[in-house]
Image (cartoon, rainbow, N blue to C red; front, side, top):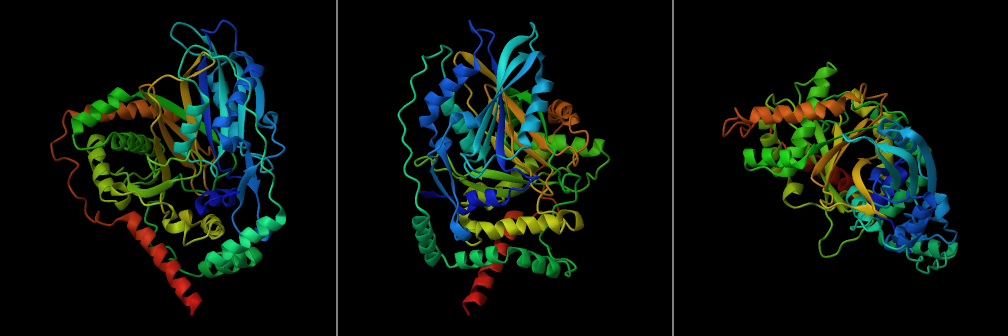
Length: 508
């Protein structure tokens, strides 16, 4: 049995009817060069032959009795690939708008917990827009639970499932596989009891589970009496930080990586990631201005950082740190803003040396972390006070060589990430074959006119390029008044001290 980490388990406990916790992808393939269209049955045989490269595809959750500990991954003795696949035909005139609408609906549905946490929809009858005329294609809509992967490992998994040659390889018979026996309830109970003795905080986690409803009510009642209970939450109010619904929309647009690299070269001491964040910031700035929102205060992003070891890489699980980053959206010059973003980033400790996410989760059990997130939502902290951050932005480097599936070339990919309560927008940037795609997963009931973001990306990139010509050598490098505060260290340090103080009082 392999037990979920606290960070992995937190994504299970954070899940609700309006916040499914899966990472998604929409992969578009050009099948115009195939002699025969790729049949769904052929795809099933192909995927069956590749299951051995992704063991988690045949592993399901084993819950601990009475929630005495985090769940385990175990082999699914009743695994059937058909339970994880679906087929949809859009018809001969199916276009990208229809595909993305379908994908948005599919992403709204949580994955079923009684089986391995993934699902793929094969979309047939898809027509690819091309200057030379529509081309025949197909698409895959993929869902993988965040408890099993992060955005970085998800990209690795798709790289393993696809091929690097345009010549279709013969589909090999699936490798023999025999599920390891499911552990007995007694063994799981004994293992959980042993883990509790090793980790005193698990006792507190058990107490929380035994009286969850009462604890939530009491904590909520007491917190509501406090006039300013969250002084550290200093991100500005934004239209993104409101209560979300179950509705989802995926908005994406691509730009050339060469244009971003040219901006990096012109600015000097910045990274390509800084340029990507600058493009996101300018797009958000223009959107807020278009919607009549406040642009005087700078938005704060939560940016995940992979902490995977290059010498010991696991393709599954969450191995991430994160930093809070001031996007300098109140800087009027979008080119100078990139320099300021870089300056804000290098002042953050995780930028210099990524801190394992277990820094907090070792101290705070996943069940209590989930309780904190639910209280954050139920108390409407982001609306009544200031949110901790305004939105997550993840930049995932992808392969720069073409990928194929039985001779059909992957031409585009769009990626989604889960939304949290009071966080109605998340951005995932993914590069592939010289193109960077900005993917906005949004709740349309919170982010109105979200489709306008697509056009704003190109306008923003052009605006940055135009501002480069008149940018002074030191413009954007000035230290803004009061910018010495390190948001990441302040929040992490305060939470650590609070938890450690509570533990000391508990031991007395």
